[in-house]
Length: 67
Image: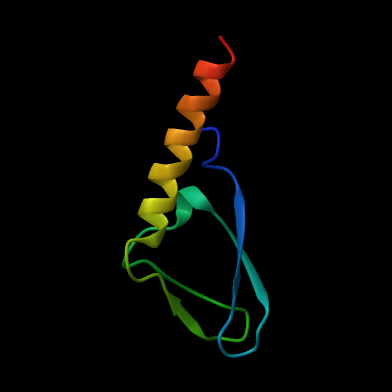
């Protein structure tokens, strides 16, 4: 697990525009969850996967720089 996995992201509900907080580690393609207003929000595409991959690369780079 990366040090960035616990980073919180805010997702805007498309219905009521509330900000819904989810950790990066919780976002997976095909996953869905509900806003407090009842709107279902589905994570689609591989954006979260790509973001995780890039953050892992950044973490490795930061470790190398720290040596």
